[in-house]
Image (cartoon, rainbow, N blue to C red):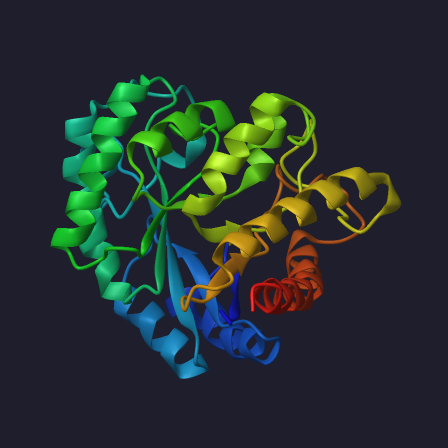
Length: 312
């Protein structure tokens, strides 16, 4: 049976001077049952130190890869470009025109090479442009598979279903995956739900698209959202019972599709700070991440065990 590995996002948690905060925090995460951390290395320096403190705590690293912005922006800021994100700096200000697929592929390669210094267990990519046609997206994602293979990263890179990327909705994602069958994705369906303004288990068009996407999932961002927000402040509250039912059902469907694999199932309870987390919420986003991770982990393990047993 595939094991279930829980990763903790460092989103919203300051690393401190010389990563002192993370060095103190990472051993606590290990004790809480996390197998690793997910790190967005945008604007971070001294990546070997991050790798060292993760090793010291016995944690793997999943790299949140943030695709690059324009060369002129990098020069203006006088910063090294350590991004493998969508082409929008910190998602702030007007969105710049998107690059052509072939241009983004060049940056994709260079940023993966930087990410390799972290010896990533997995790489989660915010990639592509929502303005692309299906053919443009197919061109880019087909090219990423070639780059992955050349760098020895085949199977490690998962492209997230995320707003402001080519995979911003079920209907933009499924047709690409049908034409690039070996591509793997990170399932963050909270973005789909808020983009579509509906839970995705009612209309056959949505159900069919999700059914197409699920076999490609190699990593899960297990965050509950609503039709009007990409993050629930209290996922166990009764007011979110319909959302909780939907998300737990679709996550179990993903586990059904992967449970017999020898590859571990990896997930991140990816709850982040304001504006994802509501202002003046009763519980901090960090506490929600930890409580949801602890709640979901045994649910996922139990379902994986049942999925395997049902096929024997």
